[in-house]
Image (tube, rainbow, N blue to C red; front, side):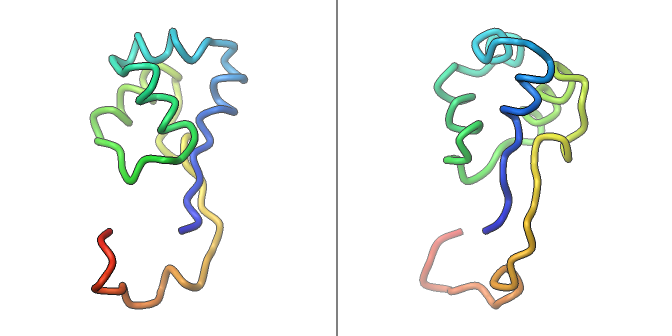
Length: 81
């Protein structure tokens, strides 16, 4: 999947510390780190909204997508989402 998390760029642009953002949003530093690295399978809309409110951004500022033709192929029913 070609969805990428671009949160690090926003953190740098805003000049804030990840630990401060995690506290403001109500996440553990570990949870925020996993999201920043793209190692999570999903994120709750409420958490996404809190990140956007804290950073003064929109959801599209936190995520990016590179076209991958494989994303249009039928899902493999043997693999979990």
